[in-house]
Amino acid sequence: MSERRSFVLIDASHDVWVEDFTLDGADLGPPALGGCGVTKRRLRGGRRDGVDLIRVDNGALAFQIVPTRGMGLWKAACGGDRAGWDSPTRDGPVHPAFVQPHDLGGIGWLEGFDELMVRCGLMNNGAPYREGDAAYPLHGRIGNIPAWYVAVHVDLEPPYAITVEGRVSESFLFGGGVELATTYTTTPGSNAVTVRDEFANVKDQAVEMQVLYHWNFGPPHLEEGSRFVAPLKTVVPRNPRAVAGLAAYDAYGPPEPGFVEQVYFCDLHAEGGRTAAMLRNRGGDKAVVLRYGVDGLPCFSLWKNTGGLRDGYVTGLEPGVNFPNPRPFEKARGRVTSLPVGGRHVTETTLEIVAGRDAVARVEAEIARIQAQGEPVVHPGPCEPFAAEG
Image (cartoon, rainbow, N blue to C red; front, side):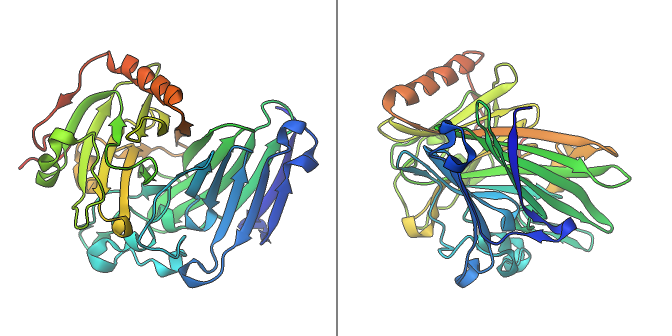
């Protein structure tokens, strides 16, 4: 391993907590790190009061991680183009203390929803449902559990990787039993950040888990005429509302106040076990791209929510181990992951922010090459095993 400098910012097991942290890459020695930096601060005021925020700048790409909200990715920007969206929460990132998941019939999770990427899970990650006396809210708990460990690592030899490591535990008596160990890694001057997650069973019996990555994008990548591009095997509308937009499932309209969300469940082709999904703007000179392995994330959901700009004009590109149906439906179809004692499930996703027509065209050509394995099958309505029929 290359020479590395490490800085522990949070370690609840050893009563370590650093409120303010500034790391200037120029002080580390290698010239390649001169334009880079990492900061940590605690936010004050409104519902963000008490939220810790870590900002990483690699000289080209800057992104912000929220340890207080399950190590979610709040915002990112590269070359003047932001990646993310404008949530109606307005004063986020919202502290979990102000989020009541069971409110509003089980959709209270939405009260804190404003990230570029939030993990959904780990006991469940789909629509709310009841099982006996237990009520399971929308998208689960992991996004509202603070990290108990956070550290920053900087490699002092090529490629000079900058890594933020975090650990979040969703484990309690008679339920839960998984710990998330995540790393966000980038390199100086890169337009990309890689998120590697390892989910470990921390109990003495097998445990089950689900996870879905809710990547959310608004302008400038989302606008009237934007397109969703991915090497699709199968496309299935989730419900009759999605059927209504099926003819243009991969295209986007302008902001439309009162728009009702549409969701499409997809199976993607892969090459060497990896695939890519892209959202590009109308002019084809701006795009965001997700690259990931289909072994760890075999399912993909496309969420279209093109409401008014102040209502949440946003689309979600969502790889997951399952589709966001109620957990009993997913379990019956083998899409709930079982971790044996000592077992682990690993996922890795890279976000790229792409600018320039040539660069966007290269990604489109790459996806077209993967798509050449077969044309997509677009189903006219909800169907098994993707969604409940009728």
